[in-house]
Image (cartoon, rainbow, N blue to C red; front, top):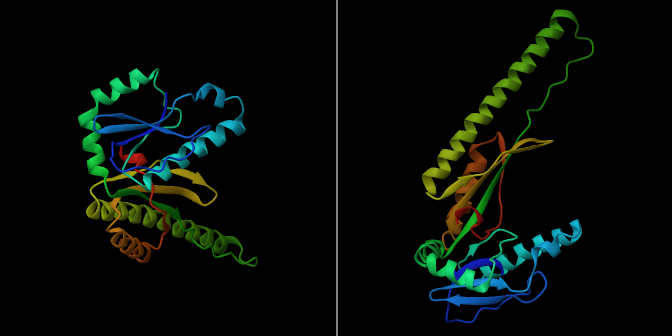
Length: 226
């Protein structure tokens, strides 16, 4: 029983999208509903890299489309239950826990704050500089680079503290490196009604912390808060 998400069992009708292969359905259990695609087999999706990637994209699309209509608890790609009865029993066992989470997430979204380190502009050493003057210039360049990296780390800590001060629900993501350096990510659970305030904070952080190129992504389902 392939499952995309858990959501409130609403009386209002929801527009259900097409899933990975067929239209999705709702399995309703008391105050909860599971968004399912009953006959989908994950093993069949792994027959080729292309098919698997298209399935992953479709899984995410379904969750995002439903998130525009209601609060939900998104599940990882590939989440399956052995049977419909097994899923029903799971929802019965975790009813109060999931209902409480959905109530906490109502009207909220996940916002990704992405930080890319700004490189220090290198001052080239003139070709005519030789001997001690050359090594002094190299030493000064090294010291300047070290000081810049220290400033970046200090600003990174300040950004984390600023986020924590304004938003009680946030998660620091894993760092990863590319040609620009080590990229940092912060996931913020924010109120969509007060989204304007988040963008104001974002603009303030952009101005305050010059050692980082800071961007704010569009609101997403609460992947990091379930």
